[in-house]
Length: 256
Ligand code: SF4
Image (cartoon, rainbow, N blue to C red; front, side, top):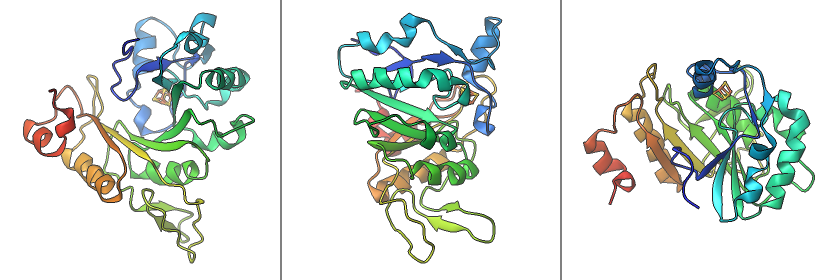
């Protein structure tokens, strides 16, 4: 079974439902909105996909990574009536690794299935800028999961994963999301959980906002220091990653 998606960090996409509503700056140029409008459909209507699409993973026999809900958000509340069925499919296909990426981590805790955590399901959040990293990572780290990951895409501002600020103004806590450094004084305790994988990518499409290469390099540095796997997806717009940066910083991206 070959790779069935252009998204470089996964093998398949699986969309048991489609449609969504924007929640943060990362949604401004949503690909799904663009594509649905092109075909005269309403992107804000959340619809269950056809039976064939919904059940597609049951036919994928080879081990593969599966990105869940590239055309929606797995934890959007409009999909509550279908999610149990989706969890069952994940449970029946332990040879597949499901990668669930959400911008609604506040919805996760109340929507996990019996028997959670599943060994074949990873949970991630999008942190397109520092504000979203500060808001979503503390929630993510409270969720038990085989692997927790952060996608900084589209990267629209610098992000420091080693200095996440949580809590109310005047009562903030600073912590490192890549390393378990529980500060007893600040009472920040995520049970030893950290972020286990980081993806960085600039925005694509005609209205792409610029990602400075230095922002991506800084995240790579943070990951190197704490031994966290780092995946560089692409620069912003249609620009390639500058050659000197590719050679120096991302040799793994150069085709053999
Ligand atoms: S959460 Fe994802 S699918 Fe939903 S509007 Fe934002 S970018 Fe689009």
